[in-house]
Image (cartoon, rainbow, N blue to C red; front, side, top):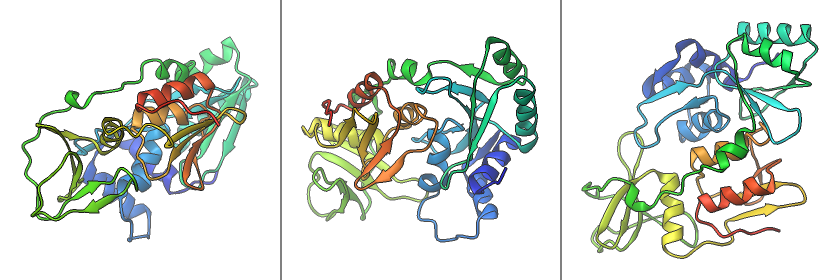
Length: 297
């Protein structure tokens, strides 16, 4: 099995179990020769997290934790994707185990994600054999998760007394980008990005309330509060493709639900990030969790 940098990073994290954010970045430095990365999180952290391999707290990016090995049932019949902790030896043992009991073991190389490993033709007996290796079996994962997706209100996030630095930006509801602001002008309602050493801080100002929010939920909350609820998310019913405007950040739990419908990372097509094999019911609940109106094309 040919490994890429995402596989190697996943192997290392599986060995360590948990890494500080600084050690996680250090591991990337050792595994890559590209020193011009604009953001560690968007290039390496998010692709691993949305596939269920690891977890982190976006509000306090201090550590990265590997998930336990799990076999997740996708929305495609008889298709189970392996997520979480793995090492080369672990994969070798799994492959030998499933080949001995007649289970299909499919490997797909990915460019911007770890190798996708899919099992098929599983029986009740083979489930038990897989579980004996310490692998949790998660049935109907996306369907179950979609039914409990959060839709937090901005008041659910903590009040913030954080001051604004001389350099900050405001989320533009039309362009979906962050515009540099004049620090001498009064601050109107909206989502603000405040740069600092480490992850930037995001403040949502609405009326007399000022809340510190993660960037992903903050963007969708802001769009909802100011009435932009269409044209950002759509669903192609014929191909079962859930699409989100590429400029926006999808909250991790929502993106994981969409991604693990197929077990493959989403694709960038035009101005949209596209998630495949998403059932219509799941797609509806994904859109509603982000406060968006349902749009089928």
